Image (tube, rainbow, N blue to C red; front, side):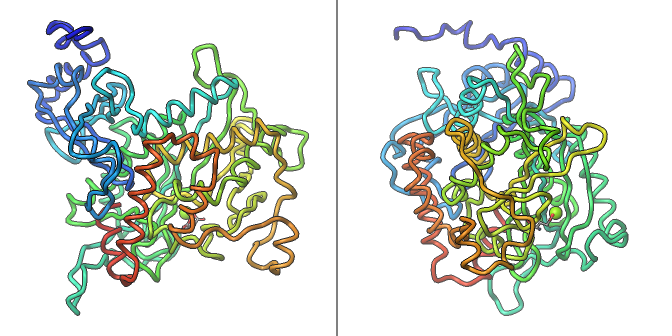
Length: 474
Ligand code: GLU
Ligand code: MG
């Protein structure tokens, strides 16, 4: 076979991989998971044993191409190029290795999807984000991001009426209440320790508004690492909860009459340093602007707002997402931005006193943990970059709750209500040429087929069915 690797090349991992193998030996890790996020936003993967790790880090683990045509209801969709014939390899990135504090003897890495010729597969979500980051870097910028995830801690409980299992929250503590801290203390400390042990630095924690709802945020990082961190975070929250016999759900609305779970996306934009890492200056900051935001920052956010209806199909990717995105829920429902406005789609965040320039950032509210974080962040970069390239103007900020404006006032200010269903967001995505082009033929074909199947799978079903299938997956 021309160009094939020799056996000695196959079994010789690079230095980063060799370090992972050594760590697995020292820590007596028996199984290492190679994980990815699929088009349904579900985290899946395969694992290899320690004795096979060195080789598998080079060759990857074989995987059917069809899994990226699999919705979150596990009903495989017919997608051209993702049938029963064909193979990719799950090749892990050694830089993402973590020993799992909540699963003894196990480690995990995030995997890239690689074609048999060694090139990135056209439907690999991580490659999509890497390519978006590279396009941004070609313009001289690095996006630094942090998710602000919320989740509901509860128990999976049979429905007395014989319906689907429900998520019953662990407590009914008040928003930010000190009692809420007490009630879930043991779980929270284990969670913080587990995250820190995996190199995810905890920024904040507090009991949130909804019953059993928690918010715990992780320090920012360059985009690819931020998405990897979010995958690790989702795994850790659930893994630690399972050890307590609990279910933690990051689904956008796991309990219909309780506050939704957002995963607001905070981002700043840095001059790229010579090594491709964030350089010296956050280009979002301008001390002379009334809101501290630079011209580049306004262009970036204008790009995001312009693409938001379609972008939502990627940042709020599930049927359940649209139950959360309602006016006056602090989750956002309108395409507008404002200074510290928690009802606006984009909030210009007031900076920290300790580092005004560095901490200037934009917060995207319509973002949740049922999305594939690689696709969401990659598409967000494309949208913002489009705003910079076309020097888009976002208009005036909205510094009141947009729901309190009349329809005419909103129309006059160019404020649009978001699509209110996944179907409608997918229609907007399909008519968004920039995002469709960025996704590329195979990925967009598969993503849209998967998401249309999910919309169809919940059509005509009740909220209990929807809740069950979302809180058990996300
Ligand atoms: N839970 C709200 C959401 O769904 C966010 C509340 C807040 O942190 O401001 O996005
Ligand atoms: Mg919150």
